[in-house]
Image 1: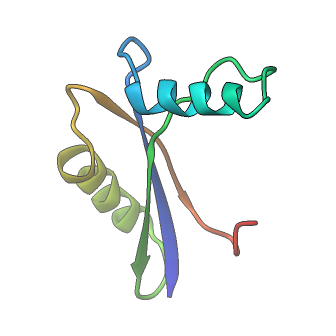
Image 2: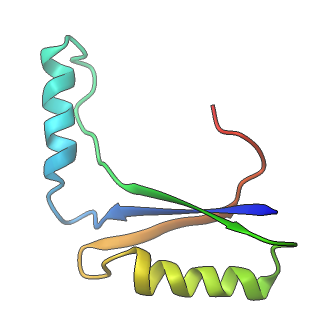
Length: 86
């Protein structure tokens, strides 16, 4: 089994109220060097067998048509996970 990671972020030109809330909280906690945060979504899709070009094409379709709202979000990354993230 393999895991494909899809990353979705708000479009750069749109306000990210959740990110603004995080940056405000960080500032109040004394982390004043951080001046911007953008909050997105990460999807981990597990597939049976090898990740072929056809599987990746299918995941790209799923990412743009189902996992993201193309009016306000961009799919910024699709990659095969090569291990456990820290």
